View (cartoon, rainbow, N blue to C red):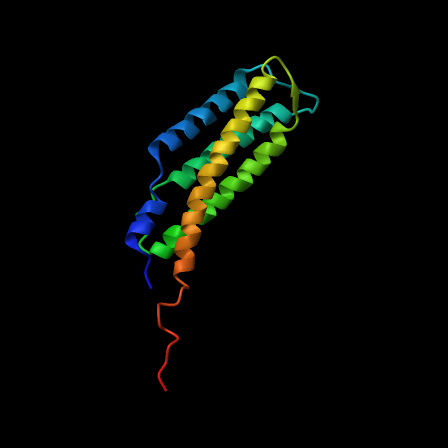
Length: 151
């Protein structure tokens, strides 16, 4: 049973305002990771945070990539789910790197900005993962009456 075309289209319809907001927030975090006054007691923690933030942005970009070129709808959805899992993993790694920060003039602002970005990103991810999961589940739904047999 193929996907409902409208559901498939809706699952990849990323709200432009939300994606623009996520991009803007991410760019602000990158800027602050490079230029803000952030302190840590762990050697190499701030360069690692920069690297993790960059990877996070790359994985967000990957999730937002157009998958219409993939001919099989199921593979398109599975690819998006894989990109979403990569984004979640990258977010977890960035969380660990950010937890090493513990001071600096801009620390509190950076922490608040990061947590707000994280919350918005997770809401975005969860919305689309739910849609893709529902699509994949629909492949295994029995059509009405498929089990009804007359003997």
